[in-house]
Structures are given as C-alpha cells and as structure tokens.
Amino acid sequence: MSETSDKKITRREVLTTGAAGLAGLAAMGVAGSEASAQGQTTPTHTLRPVEPQTGRANRNGKFANRVVLITGATSGIGKGTAYAFAREGANVFFCGRREELGKQNEAEIRGFGGEAAYMRADVRREADVRSFVDACVRKYGRIDIAFNNAGVEAVAANLTDQTLENFMNVMNTNATGVFLSMKYEIPVMLRQRGGVIVNNASVSGHDGFALISPYSASKHAIIGLTKCAALEYVPRNIRINSISPGGVDTPMLERALRGFQATAAQIAATIPVRRPARSKRWRAS
Image (cartoon, rainbow, N blue to C red; front, side, top):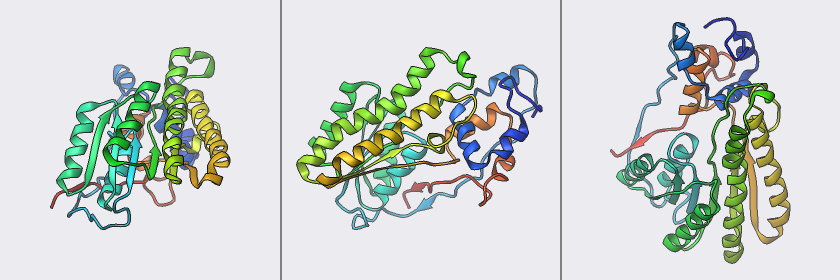
C-alpha cells in the first residue's frame, strides 16, 4: 500500500484510529479499481473465514413465536441478524433492494428449519416502507421486534468535494430510512401495546471522521432520532434503542480493505481481540 492514497489517507491514520477508524473505513467503500488503475499491487485482504454452523433451527428457542422485522437484510449485519433470530425460533420478515439475494437468504433460512419471508423494499421510499410493514402484519399478525438496519456507505471525499446527490442518497437511506421505518412500526406496536425497536447506528455516530461526512452525519441523525422516539414512547411500553458497531466482517468492510489497499492483518492489529466482529453462518445439517 502506498504511504498516501488519492484520498490522502495514510497507513498510519488507518492503523492508529482503532476500531472506530475501522468503521469509518468500512463506511467509505472506496472502489478498489482506483488502485488497480494506478498499477499498485493489491495485498491479501481476505478476512478470517467463519466456519458454517450446521444443525436445525430451534422452533422452541428464546425467540419462539416472536415476529421480527428487519430492514436491509440481504447481506452483512442484517443478514446475520435474520439468521440468528430464525435460528432461535423467530418468524423473520425482512427486506432489501437486491431481490435475488433476498430470495436466496429466505431459502437458506427455511433450509435449516427457520421461518422467514423476504419482500423487496427500498427504505428511501415511504410507500415501500409502509407496504413492507403492512405486509408483515398481514402475514404474521404483529411485530414484536424491529431492527432498522438498512444503510449504505459514503464516497470518500472532503466535505466540499461531496456531491449533493451522494449526501442525499446516504442521508435518505440511513437516516430517513430509520425515520420512515419507526413511523410505520410504532403504530403497530401501539395497537398491540408493546414492542422493541433497535436502530443500527455506528461509532461514526458518536465521533467525526474525515472524508465521510455524509455517513457520519446520517449516523448522528439515527442516534438523535432514537433518543427522541425512546422518550416519546417508553410510557406506551415500546423500548427503542440504537447500537453503534465498530468494524464488522461484512462485504462493506471487504470493499474498504480493497479500496485502501489494506490487509486484514493490518486492520486486525488495531482491534483488542485481533479481528473484526463476525456473525455465524448457518446451513442445513
């Protein structure tokens, strides 16, 4: 990896920012084609593989008969969450824009005995979100837990070089998507007199990171929305929280490693457990 890239990020900056910086890099999602075009050598960036876990879903598990709605579950954190809930007996209803991946995930979950249904929906579109929530209620009768996870990364650039199009795409997906999801999930939970909502923010929602202002702004917005909604609806038995992951072994992180010509070993060295967070992969026994 060259000492500085076109985005003016040094190796030292990558390695000294720790897990928080790792999440920032993952958010950038810089295309690896830039480095290839400059004739740079691409180092090994493959993350540590996770051995598939075999067996059958426990339909009497800790989330037996619970209905879990998840946005953005065609890959990454959302996909891992869908598999984990289904493994423990939940009825999982999830969305994403990539229909082929969505149907594949649905089939895999059903393959190990879990219950899941996929619906194509774009969280940037209010009509899509409303239809997605309504469809979940029609199919399963309620929503016990909602995980508002859908999100995209930002293009790496200084603020004045960011385009309005990119800024609005990130904000509309990450922040507006969470707002719309809660807007339609909460009335369902009010009718059933309770529920749990978890919004996926980021360590970038607590600190600022150079070159990813749209992403960081969107994650700050999610945390602000969560705090307000939590205060408004806790008296009505709806618990609303956000989580703030650091580096997670997902396709987004893989894109970041390629884009910055970093190795998995270099990134792992910045994390106390010496690896990004991982989710188990399940398959039918």
